[in-house]
Amino acid sequence: MGLLRVLCARGDVKVEWDTDRADAVAEAERIFQEHAARGYAAFKVDSSVDTATRIDQFDPAAREVIQVPRIVGG
Image 1 (cartoon, rainbow, N blue to C red):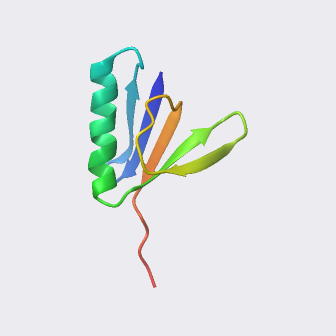
Image 2 (tube, rainbow, N blue to C red):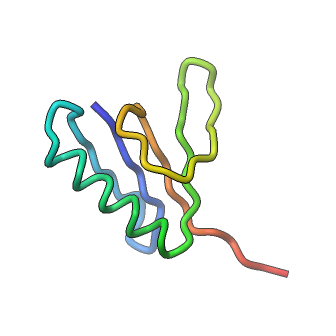
Image 3 (cartoon, rainbow, N blue to C red):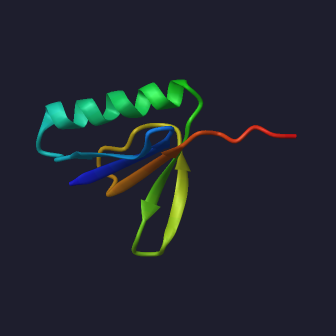
């Protein structure tokens, strides 16, 4: 089971997928790609070592992926 969390204007949107269901994986990947195209940064969370790794491609085997909008400032 995987979890995609998208932090956006609607709040913390959660999308879960079962790796045994191709349709669920495809939907999670579609949502990931949609936000990536809008400039969202993505991180794969590894709870066993309490760290997150920046990713550019959807990882269906990930336990948790978090996407956040990039912050622009200056």
